[in-house]
Length: 424
Ligand code: SAJ
Image 1 (cartoon, helix red, strand yellow):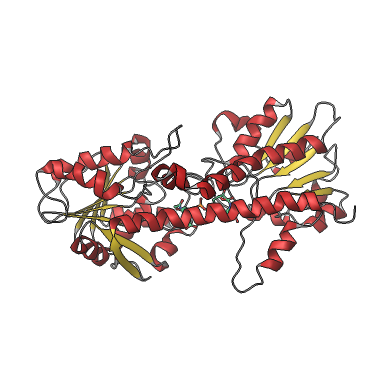
Image 2 (image 1 turned 30 degrees about the vertical axis):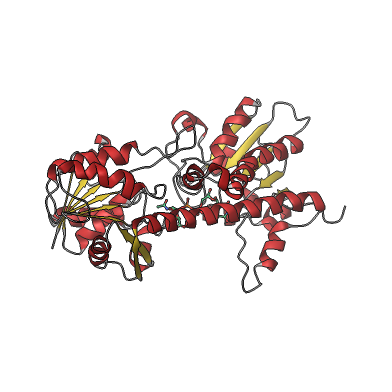
């Protein structure tokens, strides 16, 4: 059993903390957000991730998890804090540096410090380790430092924390092996041990691969509309090739990872990353393209009303960070549309709260239903309940997630992102 301090109780830190607590370690969860700590101490969890709340309650009742706003002396310190991107598209490592500095007073010989946050390659060795060496000790010799990135999908985080293979990198081989031994306590996937910089590069490469792949799908979608094919059919059939796996087009790339992490590689070599920068430009084009579709399909309509299905960055999550749907929503409002939102996964939406409503209310009087997130609930909506409520029977589906036959049977015209007029 070890004492473990997890700094940052977000989508990655909190599940990681409860996972270590569940196997008998004594875990101290640290976060600077007092409302998060208050909620946790009242048995409520601020992230909607299946299974986490139950594990938090069990761990707290067992005394294996306490939460507080500052670290304490422990054997292991895990940093899982946000690493956003600045306006200049450079990694903002402020939270990581602050978390590392807060650990220094408690660091003792033989301790292990693990960074989980996604960072530009060379961060662990050139920024984190020197901060920790303010303790007067040598990283990799007197104490150990490793990089252990997450690769978990929101909605399945706990299962993936256990089942997925993992890469871990140390500032020394011993550091990496010690971190591997720690994570083997719950990771059933294969853990590969490399150096810290290689592990950092692996993580950013994974998310950059997804970003570039989605950009290809988006570019194929724009081509599909232009040359009159259904890109979804094209991708479905192309992926039957045993070595082809093209992802899906959409209204843009959101979330706090996939659109941001590629900038960590651009930062290292602005002149040497033309493909990554072009992919970012293609993905950033998609919200504007969706707006063009909406304006084209509602041209000439007096006082247009649009209903947005899904404001989150993708389907079946409650997260709106970097959501392209919000960018589209803001522009649609500027264009003078009336807007109502239907998103069964979102309860609070700050300045747009008043627009959030239920299915029927959201489509009542609508000139266009614009689908921007592929929530599972949208696949089998009872169209007959709303067919008579809309002013115009029009759907623009940017996720290909509605039952188009059901909507067409109630008289709706479906405009599908990436599908040109095949019989023009
Ligand atoms: N997207 C498409 N088409 C696709 C796939 C994704 O347009 O075919 C869009 C989504 O709509 C979304 C964005 O890309 O806007 C990113 O979605 P994603 O599913 O590719 O990835 P995320 O953002 O959910 O990435 C998460 C991250 N982990 C956490 O947030 C805890 C990331 O670090 C993980 O590597 C990733 O899951 C994963 O899949 O493992």
